[in-house]
Length: 213
Image 1 (tube, rainbow, N blue to C red):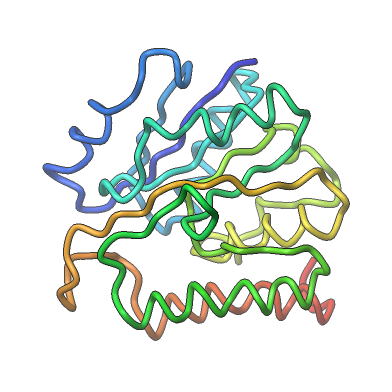
Image 2 (image 1 turned 120 degrees about the vertical axis):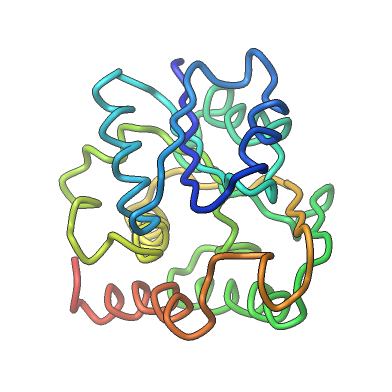
């Protein structure tokens, strides 16, 4: 199965090179490094390339060193060997770990999965971790329209996550690590607490209410 990695980058000078160096030679067949104009927009550019090259599996991960490329097989193997459609990386499963996670983010990332479990009926331990892998064929499901303009930001990842959980696809989680380089107010993430957290929470609300499709 042809595997590709999509890595959206934004002001990652000095980091992206170290990320690429950690890729095992046989972990993926192609790496797309996409400069961000909104993370959803960047990921969709990667989707276009992946589909045009007939990729079977898409891996999405951070370009700032928070995700470890050495752990990619943990996400792709359940698809290749066990027939899963979508594999979410979780720092909260046995064998996973979160290092230097900022206090408020640590609280949110622990509580948010409870809301998803309640609203989707699928047990989740991790939702906000962008390190995940899934079949490229998901993007061709007529019930999943990732190309909508309102999905050009963080909304995209949560839109797809919700669709997978509610359309009956084979879903699982696997332990991964998430390492923050520093915990200062600036520098550990590009997420804005006010604007971007709204983009993270909004999709499940709109989809659950039927306001978006």
